[in-house]
Structure formats: C-alpha cells, structure tokens
Length: 549
Image (tube, rainbow, N blue to C red; front, top):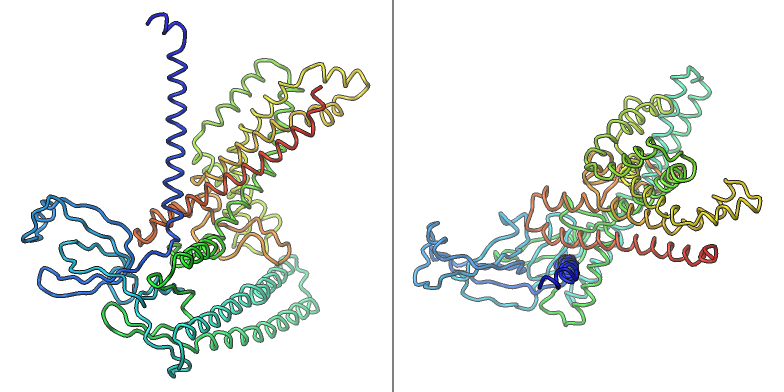
C-alpha cells in the first residue's frame, strides 16, 4: 500500500475523480437548465378539472399543469383540512395555470387530488396569448365583425382576423417606432440646438425663425403620421371573439389584443413541433411584456451582445499595450514585480466594487464633466452623466483587463528570444519587430485572454446594475437616428433579466419557466461568443504558425 501511495497513482485517481465530478456537475446543470428552459415552449395539454370543495360546492377549473408534488397528509390536517376517508400518508397536489387574470384572483392555483372528481382534456379549448393580462383559456363561441356574428368556419375566420389584427398592430408599431420616433428625436435636437444658441448668445431672429420653421414642418409631419396611426388602431379594433371561460360565462376579447392562439388538445404531434419552434423563435425575437413575465427577450440579447462587443473593443488594445510594456520595455525590477502582483490581485476584487468605481468615476465624474463641456444645453438633464452602455462596457473592461494582460504576457514569454534577435539582426527596429513578428505570434494568446474576458463580462450582473442596465429599455442603443449608435443609452441584459424575472417579478410562478429559458439563452450566447473567438484564435494560430519555424 505504501508503495502504491508513493507511486503517485492515488493522486492521479483523485485528480481524475475531481475532474469527472466537476464535469458531471456542469453537464448536469446545463442539462437541467436546458430541459426546464426548452420544455417551456412545448404546447402542453389543457386540462379541465371538475372539483368538489369540502363545503360541497362544485367547481370547474381549466388550465395547464405546471407542476405537481406530494404533501404529507398530517400537515394538511394540521392546517385544518378535514380529508375524511383519506388514509394515505401523502396527498398529491397540482399547480395549474388558469390564466384569465382579470376574472380570477390568481392565475396559478394548487389543486388537491382529494378534491378532484374528474380530469379530462376536452377538444375545443383555446389558449389565447394576449398583449396584456396574460393568457386566456376557454371555448370559442362566436366571432364578431363590427359587432355582427360571422357565418362560416369559426376557426378559419379567427385565423384570418388575428392575422389581420397582428399585421395592423405591427404596422402601427413600425410607424410609432420609425417615423414618429424619428420626428420626436429631431424635435428634441432642435430644442437643444435652440438652447445652445441661447447659452452662446447667438440666437438671432433669423436663426430662431429657421428653427421654428423646421419645428412647424416636423409637427405637421407628425400630425399626418399620428392620423395614420389612429386609423390603423381603429381598423385593428374592429373584430371581437366571444369565449366561454371556466366560470361558464361568455367573455368578449378584442382581437386586437390577441397575439396568437393555440388549441393544444386538438393538435397532432407534428403540429405541436411546429408550434414549439414558432414559440421559441418568438421568445428570441419579440420584446418583453407584462413586466418581463411575458413575451420575448430580444432587447436583452441585443444589449448583452452589444455591450460585450464594445467591452472587447475597449479592453483588447489596453490589455495588449500594457502587457507589451511590462514584458518588452519595462525594467525587470521590484517595481515591475509589484505591478504584476497588483494586476493579478485585481482579478480577485469583487465585481460590485468595480460597479461602485464605475458609478463614481465614469458616470458622475467623467460623464458629468463631458456633459458640462459638450452638452451644456441639455443640463440639468444628463447625457453622459447617467448610467449607460458605454460606462458599462468601460467598467467591465477594467474588470477583465487583468485577464487580457496576464494572458498576453504569457503569450509573449513563449516567443523565443532568437526570433526577436534575428529580426533585429536583419535591421528591423524594435517597434517593427513587435508589430510584424512578436504580436502576430502572440495573437492566439491575446485571443485566449479575450475569450476569458468575454465569458466573464457576459455573465456579470452586479456592476451593471449600477452603471447602465435597466429592467425595460424603451429604445435600443442602435437605431436609424444619426449618429445611429447611442452609447449614452441604458440597455437590457440577459443576466439582469434573469435576476429581475426570478426575484423581482410580482408573479413568481409565471416567471419560473422564463428564468430557466433565459438562463439557457444566456449560456448559449456566451458559448456562441466564445466559439466565435475560438474560431478567430485558431485561424490566427494557423496563419502565423510559419513564423514559429
């Protein structure tokens, strides 16, 4: 046994076991997130439960089965439930999403199996996805056009009307976010231009008349677009669907409020697969609704990728230049060693500290100074003196800077001295040697540092809560208004979206599947960014491989 320990074999087995446990844990976590997140989009059956309450009243519940669990019978009896004639140790209970939020107290409720007399999946139950108040479940009774019942196939009529209403709503939204938004942006620019002229005492009667003329033209254009917008909304409000809900009451739902509908109990497996991918695509491309508990996450995906790319553009030159100075130019003395130790220790500073630093230095100090120097006409309203995507990218660039510096220095140290000496012997200057020989050979190591920086930046949330991320951003940092990229704007982030939906949502049960889905999406975005960077690194490695020989 002693010889076996001395051989080192136990440590090899322990190391292999630790690596295996780590890999299994990571893979298991990813599988759990993926399964719970991706299964959210599957069109589940809609059940109809017939219940008998302890007081003898009968009730019908319609909804989707979200979860089930077993509860000790003794605990329920301890809370006052009679459960007469029930002798089992555990009682199963079901979590049902009933929707119809404006007509019932809660759109989620627990049902005890002891109260259920029957559970069926009847055909004809429709699930309506609405712009507000969440889903609605019920039986389609009638379709009304301009208040009059329509003849013919109800399903075909409903499909056509929803398609028409969605198209009109999309046209209205495009009009609102496009031309109308652009006019408002130009009006605000004119206001700031007039204010700037006033501050500089250069506002003459001629310039004021010119500005007022431009404002008048823009307002006239605005009124024309507004008239089109109201006309589109009026057209969309034409139709109504009558639905019988689980209270056995008929409810009128304006079709303009309906985004989509499905009838899962009537669908084949192939239809469910098609609906699944349709729902998945909508989750990725749509905007969030209902305080982030409904709709998609496209602004959060865009904000995450945009901020990470901006961070990469900022951190790469700073990190590479710092590493080149430390390795190629700085004297190898105690001061340089202290600087290296300080850089390595910076990687261990809690990220929230970077957030506080970013808020104080970038937002209040630097942003406030920029506002005073370049945007005095907008004061007291801040332009750069408020959290935004630029300050978030800079804060995360500082946070990830040690990773890039250390990785680049390691890459530079692996380049043989003979390569540098050969280049210098052939008459190249040190700068030329660095630019044409050393940096290309170290580029794979630079990309490795960038990959690590991107992975960490994409997952960080704490500092962003102080320097730019918000629950709902009205506009993206990129639009059609000059200068097109607006780095002073706030943005949405997938990591903060998970925190907000999971811990700040008023409807926790509705938000739980979204947390898994968004977490899976965040992991997918990080993996996609890393794969892109790894591809670039491998390309650079092959391109400059000849320099190593």
